[in-house]
Image (cartoon, rainbow, N blue to C red; front, side, top):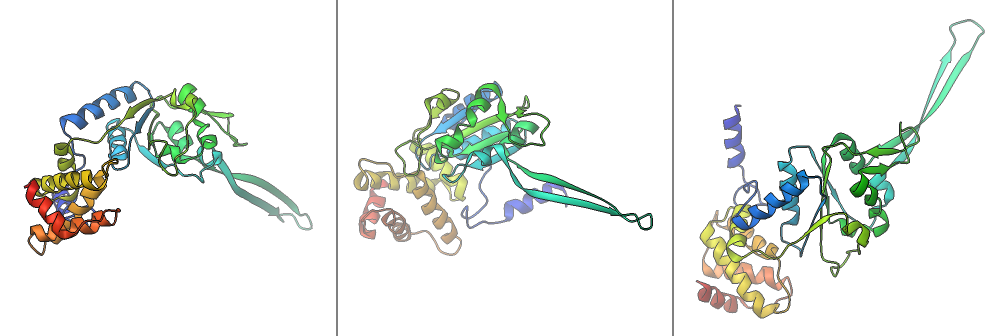
Length: 304
């Protein structure tokens, strides 16, 4: 199968996770493009980046896109409270024994035995050694103690190792090694505070919610739903949000979920306002709202 045929075949496949069709690789508007270009410039200069913001802003997508454009292999690591220092440094995972018994000469027995420690390298260590780009997603979900390992990595490009068989006591970062991190605000559940010394070693982009046009474009690109219907859904969710969550923001994931369901349903039935209202009610009420389909249908008519 030639390249063009393969691409065409892949584009024809459908995925329930992305709606009616496979999403575009990366959606950009001037707003997003400016952010990516600046991040790429700083990353190429060797500056560690941290994209911080509320859930559903696409922090991971932006980090991965910048990593991809750097042109090196990308490693992805997700933060978690159970991660320890060994997960960032590497660790011994067991021992291997090897023995040889020589009976070549009659009545003479010679045996040799050796014991070797088995070492499991960390993603961080491998990325530093090989010059990969490491995306450390939601790094503040790991403990401050575990993330303390990053202090020497971000400042001197050195990772202290406990591998007793290593040629040197530390791993020095390859010139092409880069690290990009993402994080949620510290008031989020499950998020640990980061030492000022660590934050001082990185450039933090504090992301805010995109405008409605950009959000609608992302929804359409990710789900395959047409631009007109995506815009209608985004405007509807934003309007209802002011009624239901006046002091908080409903993340873009609500609109993405509604659009993804709508894209799948559109394959078999037309998307009527009544159907859209029912999908919106099910999604938003599951997030703590108390809306009837009649109220949503009226809001949908007002947004048209």
